[in-house]
Image (cartoon, rainbow, N blue to C red; front, side, top):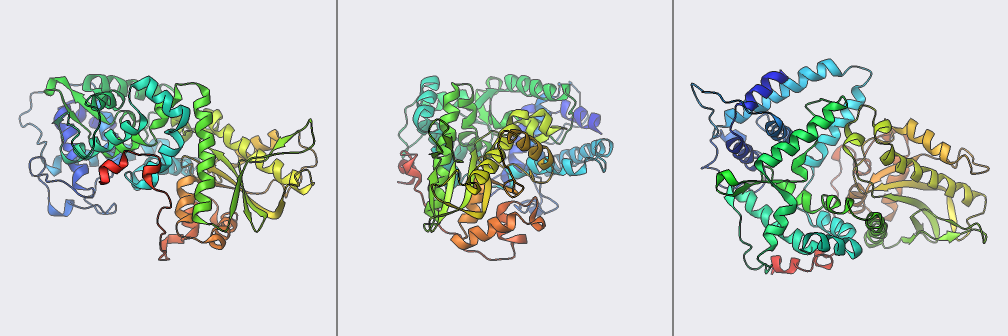
Length: 504
């Protein structure tokens, strides 16, 4: 089935297929443009319902695009050329992909690895089940990656500020969402950006079609070389370069999945800093801790949150975990903050812990730091404040790590145990169950909770009944409750001053 799919893709025209995939994504997204010039479709297909039989899942569209861009072309004289404006053509491609994935799974998945496979599939789907263009996301990533030395480095390297880059990406998102292949757009009022800003932005987020094919092929071949040729899990060049340009097609551009332009302007800022000095990501991690403190205190003003602090005797000073949450002066929760980027191996590797030791090592280190703190508080070495006997230990991550407390927990606990070997008088109660939570999930809970409800959610997260659940699902199991969401407490123009030009 895989060979048949690749044969079909090898015979399709890249430019027309990119446009066709753009059209089905647009049709089944909010605020769809007029698609009369691009696609003929049954009215039932105009849906945003992920469970509808006519809905083409976004992650499947992404995978088809990656396979299209990595499959060598075969010239064929068709008796009847493919109809690139027919919904049926898209549906047949999606169904062919599903059949190939199912055929592959039948060979590679069994009772010994089915839970690992479900976890990988959750990683693939999760990005596409969330809003891309939302104030919370823009604020969070700009706050962490878009200030201080990170902002200075970005501007020195690229000739434009992060503010200019993000606002241009937003403008390009609007344009590429409205039209498929198009000339490079002008930035029109109310935005007053330098004329060269669009070109400088495209240097970072766009690739010429032949170069995109070469890069996509290279990345997929690297994955296949280490034994993971699974169709369902392909490294995505589209998340780094969401726009494709083509000199052959009158220097026009297309974003087959425009949502990824916003992804590139938020989470994707990491790509622009990762190659710089180590201090940049260290600074970003510090701002992540600062953001966590700021968010909790703004959402739950009864709490006081302090950053890490020194304690212990002179000559043997130690530091607390990154954040201490206090209620009435008593420490009720302790956070280790990890802005560690999820690598491809950490998400989709056959042995994720072994293949991504650096990423998982950071999580294990965080666990050991929490355990050591609880031990030192119990022994009176930490005496700055009273720490509740049942205080929660939480690993707060920038990215969404799935089911760490189900699949990788034995290896994580073993690694954390080893890191605690030099800590005297450790007791089982010190090595309490740790809660794993992304900043996005935490804010989802904070937005619909008061202080007592947040602490209750933390308590439930440590119960066996909720092992492996995301924190926001623990707060509202199966979405049975109708919870009122509080407004986001921060103004986006605090970190994006140019935002005022968009809304003016």
